[in-house]
Every structure is written in C-alpha cells, then in structure tokens.
Amino acid sequence: MTEKWSQEVTEDSDALDLEDGLFKKDDPKEIARSLKRSAEQSDRRKGTPLQSAMGMLTFYINRAGDNLAEDRRKTLEQAKDELRALFDKD
Image (spheres, one colour):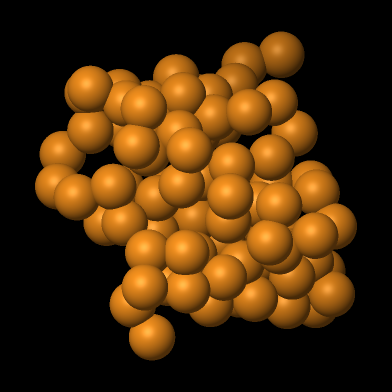
C-alpha cells in the first residue's frame, strides 16, 4: 500500500520527531506536552518551537479534514490551547 504524502510528512518531517500515536491520544495536555518537547529538542525545525509545534498540529488537523471525528477534532483543538499555555502565549 502506498503512503499518502501527508502521512509521510507527519512521520518523516524534518521539522519534528513526533512520538508514535501522538495524535491518537485522548488528553489534550499530553498531546501539547509531547509536541512542546519535540519542538524544543529538534535542531531541524524552522521558526520558534511554538511555531513548529503549532504548525504540525494544524497540519494534522487540516489534512484529516472531514475524516476527523468531531470529538477527535475537539481534543486536538483543545491541544492548541494547551500548547499556547505551555509556551505562555494566551
């Protein structure tokens, strides 16, 4: 089976090394903490850690599109708020 380009970007992006199953987690705080950790540890990212983490989260949400269940979208949108709070950006 051929991977979609968006799956390849999510898994092999130069921006961040993401934890396996990150976007399937149920806790928005846990998602945000993992993204923050990945962004801060990456020496390959472009922009600030917040920009990289938020960009990857937004990319995932946008690429999932209508295939993303409403409760999953809500969790990921909450993760954005948690991410801003972790970086002290309200």
